[in-house]
Length: 305
Image (spheres, rainbow, N blue to C red):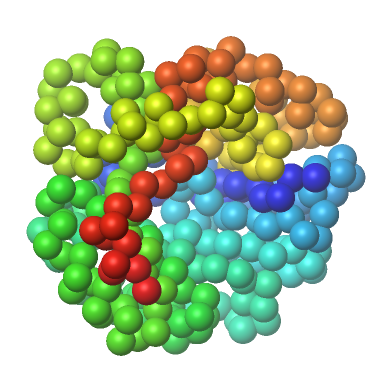
């Protein structure tokens, strides 16, 4: 049984994040879509039939796509409710849609990613109108309840002076605020950085945008027997119902998928996931440990609420 399943219901994202797999130009030639509800229902049934999930499994309706863009999102949520499955949504809050309260009973967390707390920061990353984002967050908070909202504030070098204002703003609204250093959320780029093969222009941008001073020390602390959570506790599925090797590989990677959910048995899925060539190199370089260990410095931890 997997504790959580990252199910990419939307291969589409409207944000422009340079350090994300979905924001990379190398993905433009790879097709994406919104998963049809009939396929989503079949996939959920298949996961149960193969004993890959049970009713304690949490379905995370995202990987790097934007789930709120899915035109049939209510139908997908209804399928989860009918199967008594808890779910989590992560969004950039660029859009608001009204949802029936009955569909929200199984919602565990509604996470909102923010790249800053000003129009200047949004111009550098997501590309949205900041005031519209705040308005949408207020509407989502009213709909799902402040206790389920979690603001995931990505700390960059350019938004350090915005953390305190953001923390104060959400504390007044009884909304959880979680700041952490932004990652390179793309295996190819993260591996290039750690192996000192990143192109000079990209490295210069990374040094201007990201907080990277802690990375070497963090990776050096990894235990020798470190096992990636992707192997034993997390399953990632894309919008075509392909089982992915892990959550950080883009569609351009040769080891992106191990095959279709509908053609692999539960045992085959588990065996293939732990025997991918990319996994060995990923762990050797330190990418897996970096991605699965968010860094919280004392400086930003004090703003958590």
